[in-house]
Length: 326
Length: 263
Image 1 (cartoon, rainbow over the protein chains, first blue to last red):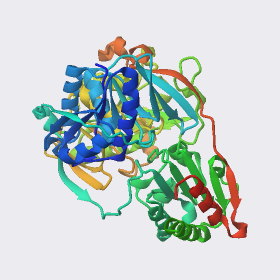
Image 2: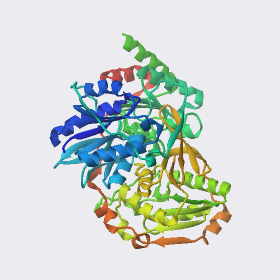
Image 3: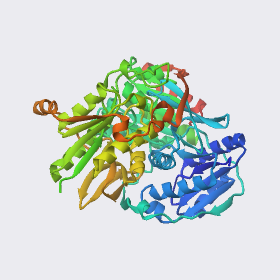
Image 4: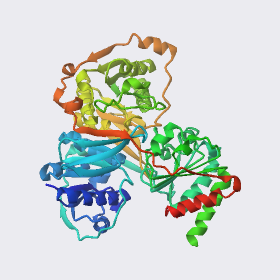
C-alpha cells in the first residue's frame, strides 16, 4: 500500500492544529507515494473531527470510536494502530511529535520492530523512502535521516508544515477497537484542570513570548502575558525564571524544558545562554528585547531591540492593539 | 517484601558544551566533550532511592555504553545511594538508535526481574524521549511516562502526568516502567561517605552474549534509522538591531512584526 496515514491528535474530537499540518504534509507525501492521505481517528467525537479533517484534505479516514482511548494511557492506541499497520501495510504513518504522539509511535515501532524518526522539522519522499530533517545540538546542526524499511513511522514537530485547507469529501471506514486486558493496565484515574488561562500550550503554539531573568520578579511576567495575549501567543520562560520559581516548568523553553519551533519567538529579558538557545533556535522568526547589547541572544535574532523591557513591552502591546483595530 | 528497583541511566554531553558529530559514521563524538549523568536521570535515581527508603528495597543502576565515562554515570548513582550497578558494554552496540537501545536494555532488565524500573523521561542530548516507552513495550510492561509525584502502594504505581491543561493522575500495576519527568524532585548530592562507599559497591559488566542480546538488532547495522547527511545549519537571520535610545524601539518592532504579517 502506498497510503500516507496521519494519527489524529485530538481531544474529544477537537483536532489540534498540528493534525491539520500533518494532513497537509501527508497530501504532499502521498503525491510521491501514489497513495492517499488517510486520517486515523481513535477516540470519541468523530462527528466534530470529521468536519475538520475533510477541510484539511483527508481523502479517507479509519475511524475507531471507543471510550478506552481516553480512559487508558496510550496502550489502546498502540494496540489498534499496530494491528491496522500490520494488516494494511500503509507507506507510513505521521505522528505529532509531542509527548503523546511520540510515545505511541515508539511503542508501535518496538512492537512491530520498525524504526521511528522523531522530532522531524521536514519530511520528503526520496526513492520511495522518507527523508526527514531534524536539528541536533540545539539547532546548530541539520541532520537528514531515513528508515531502512517500512511501514515508515515519522514524528513531525508542530509548525514544521503550514496547514493548508483543501476540502474533500471524506470516505470513512470504521475499524475494530476491541483491545486486550493488557492494554487497559494504565488507567487515567483523574483529570485535573488548571485554571483556564486561555493561552495555547507552549509545545505547539505558533507564537511564543518568553520571559527570563530580566523580568526581575515573578509579578512582572504580567507584561509578557499582556503581549502574549495581544498576539494570541503562548507564554514561555527561561530556565533561570523557572528555577527561581517565577513560572511553571511546563512553560520552560530550553534544553531541560520544551524544544519549540514556532513561527515567531519573542525573547524578553533573556540573555540567550546555550541552554535556552537549544530549545528555540529553530523558530522561524526570532525577536529579542534586552537591555544588554552584548547579550548572546542578539547573535541569533531577526529583529532585536536594545533597551529597557519595562519601557518597551507595554508600549509595544498598546501599539499592536492600535494597529489591529486600525 | 523488599522491592527490586532498577534505574536506567545514561551519560550525556555537558549541557553547556558545544558538541560535534564524528565525520566517519555520523555518531556523536563523545570523546570531544565533557559528559555528565543525564540531569533527568538523576531525578529518576532520586525516585528510586526514595522508594528504596520507604520500602526497604534494593536499587540497581543499569547503563549501556562504552567503558569509562558510562561507568562514571553508574558510579555517580551509586554514590547517591544506589546499591549496585550493571554495565552493558560491547563494541557491537556502537551506533544503536533508540529502538535498538530499548531492546538491549530490555534484555538486561529482564535478567534482573525487577518490580519497578525508573528512567529519566528524556535525555538532554538526543531528547527524543523514545526509549522508556519502547523499553516497556519490549518488556510487555505497563508504562507510566512523563510523571512526577510518584507513589507506590499495594503493587500499584501512581503518578501525575502533565497535560496541556493541567495533569492526569495515572495508575498502573507493577512491574512497570516509569519515565520520570524533569522537575519531579531535587536530586540529593552524594555525601563524602556515599562517594567513598560507592567505590566498594559491585558493578557487573555484561557483554551482548551475557545478556542474550541478538547482535543483528543492535549497533549501526541493527538500527532501523539511518543518518544520510548532516551539516551546520546556515544561520539565515536578518539581525536587524534597533536601539531604544530614541524611545521608538516599540514602533520599529511593531513595523517589523507587521511586515512579517504577525499583526
